[in-house]
Length: 169
Image (tube, rainbow, N blue to C red):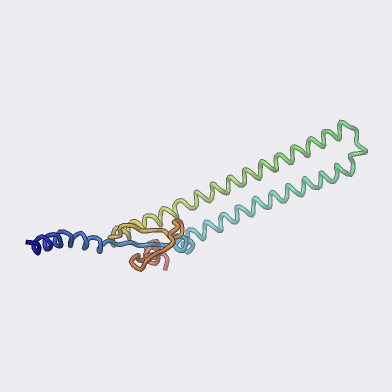
């Protein structure tokens, strides 16, 4: 009787153990994938060009401000009070415009980066989902975005499969 109970428990537990053994986990490094994508490289180049244009404009306006400021300082004692006040107001306005331009440039760069990265990230995500479903993985962890202190040998690195899926050779 005891043998039959043990055998029955073993037969019930066996499929559950088998199901646990079949669970498949995978991991990727999304930055290793994204950094090799042609779309990413083009986006980086475009963003660097945009940033350089903003930096050039900021430098130009800073030089213009410095020149006017030096002229003002050199002439301040000899100018009538109303002219000195007007020039001082012009300098303050220039400084405020430059600060506003700097903030606008930063916001534009942030928005351009997000607009450029969204389709790239979506393409990688779609590839991960397709490979994950096709190969029967329960979870695919991204080691770049998720802090996982240990990855065991049971987890399969599918980074190269995702690279192939998004067209990286």
